Length: 380
View 1 (cartoon, one colour):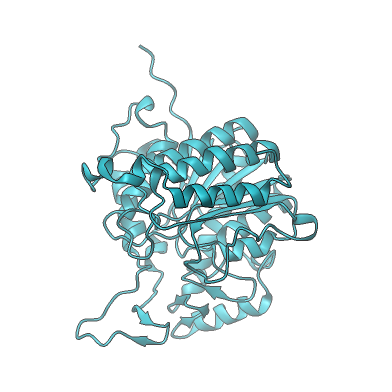
View 2 (cartoon, helix red, strand yellow):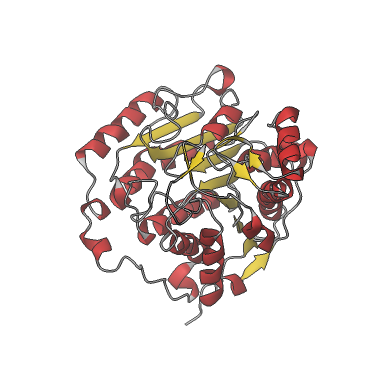
């Protein structure tokens, strides 16, 4: 029996990502917890480092093509960010570090690492557009999707996905692009960047009104020429694998097939997982595999397979790395490509979780609200 050809998958990773210093976990971004032992920041290096370790242990990274990150220059960053934000980050980086906006800390030298994160997403996009790889995983940090034009926010310094998409459009001949954000928190910076732009379809699946408060409402659909090109799917806590699958089937797949992007970028936060301390959505490894397969299918249908996954959040020090590794496993073709599937560390409980196999009534209502809001613009 002939084994199916393993897809060509790129991997962007650099040890310098693990030196991004977020410091201690602070109450209200201002003061340390009053415990005798210091509490590390939830967006520390462990998750990305352990994800890469799992990819190495299971042979995934051996099958991936290494793509070296670019160092995003001012021209790349100011495609969205304002020069004053770049100056603030540079100033903090040259000294002791500090908050680049609202809850987005860096340490000394952090500007270069944040530029490498944005440049890592750029390199992944360049690899798939040039045909060097079919798809790519940018395992970068700091994350990006909360970063606004004028400030960092929510652990994010520069908006990696936005910078990468604008690089593709300005320099690589890409016209229409899709950014799908499955982080448990709303991608407010990404929405802001593309809100009046009909060349980029932005879709966000997130826990309803979790963070940032007030962002990601179903009624936020874009404005001007971009009206109808922002799709927000705020979902109730506990949505789980079945609910996310229903959103893909009833909302995401039909809209993306009508839009027909030339490039797909996924802002992949693994903080919707069943063990994440900053979200309550109950996704398991199979949920992340399902979403990755759906994006591979859409990329194959719409844009010659051009798919980039860029790392966002994920704060369970044990479970988030498995979610990231499961995404890499799926990009590589999974069991059909001869890979041994990762065993879910949550164990047999993944099968007994009700949201793993049942779409709850709250989720059904949320999906119908999205369909009603978007039915003016797309056939659903």
